[in-house]
Image (tube, rainbow, N blue to C red; front, top):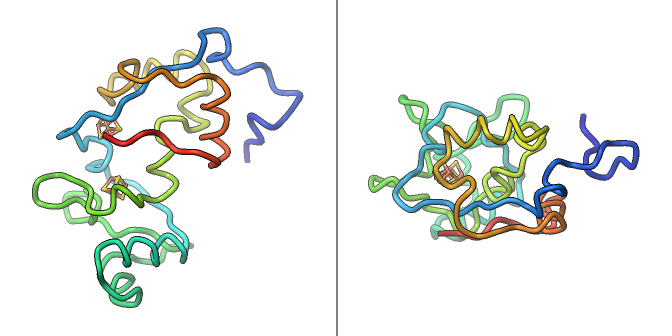
Length: 150
Ligand code: SF4
Ligand code: SF4
């Protein structure tokens, strides 16, 4: 498990050399929500999302979650996240899980400038729009803040 960026022995993250990084999620994209993968959530996340869409937590859990090692959001047959509506908008965007709130400032994407560049080929929101300072990025990586919505 990475202790980055708390580990004082770790090298300075590359984004400190670049005065932070730009990112703005693009409306009508949803590319990252359509990729098969694991969206990990907690009991509190499930309760928050249930309240947001106006259903009881147990109903939400039955309809939208599954357990594989831990609580996850379900995927549709095509691999897309079950929380996408028919217009490709996230039904729980305002209360989306931490994994979604902190993208693209994930350890594996921020490993170096090359991994950041690689992700840019996938996410059209990378390197455009709002500039996040190194300190803001660190706070998001520690789940103390989140990226701005669209
Ligand atoms: S984070 Fe990037 S890939 Fe995901 S919806 Fe926003 S712009 Fe698209
Ligand atoms: S919860 Fe919302 S933002 Fe997160 S993957 Fe699902 S649709 Fe996308």
